[in-house]
Amino acid sequence: MKKDFLALSDWSREELEQIFELTRELKEKQKRGEEHHLLKGKTLGMIFEKSSTRTRVSFEVGMFQLGGHALFLHSGTTQLGRGEPIKDTGRVMSRYVDGIMIRTFSQEGVEELARCSDIPVINGLTDKYHPCQIMADIFTVIEHKGAFKDLAYCWIGDGNNMANSWINAAAIFGFELRVATPEGYEPDADVVARAEKLGAKILYTHDPAEAARGAHVLNTDVWASMGQEEEQQEREKAFTGFQLNSDIVQVADPACIVLHCLPAHRGEEITDEVIEGPHSVVFDEAENRLHVQKAIMATLMS
Ligand code: CP
Ligand code: NVA
Image (cartoon, rainbow, N blue to C red; front, side, top):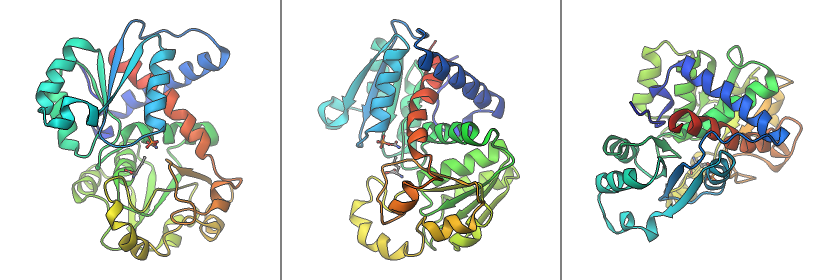
């Protein structure tokens, strides 16, 4: 039976660890220049209803490195953008390609696409989750810290798709997570409730310093995500004090690492000093999107 990659919560810890194992192998092969054509002759359709740099480039390059091919389909230039139902799109694409990656607004839309497609569907970001990014983030932590389950993770900022994904990850892997958001910008209640049910070790606070104290991994994201541009000014006010800056780094573990999924708004959610500073691993993190997604595609599509 085909499997999709729509949310971390659909996967077991063991399955995700196997993806990390394959990521390591594929990254080493790519660095040594060894062929690793696990998806020779296969094609990935990439549907974008939002902008992207990393996701688009890393999936396209990843398919090429795996011996396959990727098609960039911007919704504005497809019939999907003119109102063709998602279920027809999924059925038609299933006749042409071997997998679909989609970046869109609603998680339900991605789930519907997966239900009506005979081929694996990968979530390349929705308003609710960004599962490929979280996999790259954790892989980056493993590379820099050697292990990841005994560390304390800190999220500062919006309770958005990245925060929701971190909560899923904390519930699956059992690591300690502290989430600091302004009031009214907490993560999705159903995601929080599900993690609680699974016994996740998560602290929710409105105090960034409390979340950061002694933390090994500091992480933030933009205050206004794609689709929330008109809320930018209102959010700038609400998020005052929720910046990942050197004061926050000071209270964290001295050997902490700083993550940001990018793109960053320097001077808003993170300072230039921190993103360029010695704790920042954001460009390794961005690179790892490529390696992790190759492992995800090979797992689903070969
Ligand atoms: N982090 C991330 O998904 O980047 P893009 O929006 O550039 O794809
Ligand atoms: N939260 C951001 C992540 C971008 C990769 C957004 O959804 O725009």
